[in-house]
Image (cartoon, rainbow, N blue to C red; front, side, top):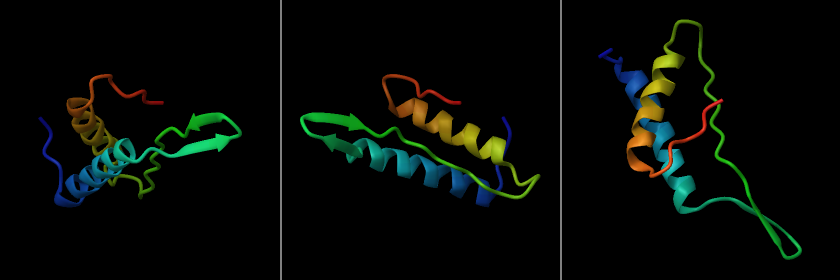
Length: 74
């Protein structure tokens, strides 16, 4: 298993925390009687070689452990 640097670990856990907050308080758009949930979107911007792939892999791995249905990743 690949060991992450401290800043990568912190970034991954921050994404997980944001997702967990979204699950507790999803964003809903109401238009008349209709309610539409806004999907969770996370954008990760960092320099080349900073480990964006491993950060996102760690975050998705942690999120997958806590949900009954695996997340959709594009």
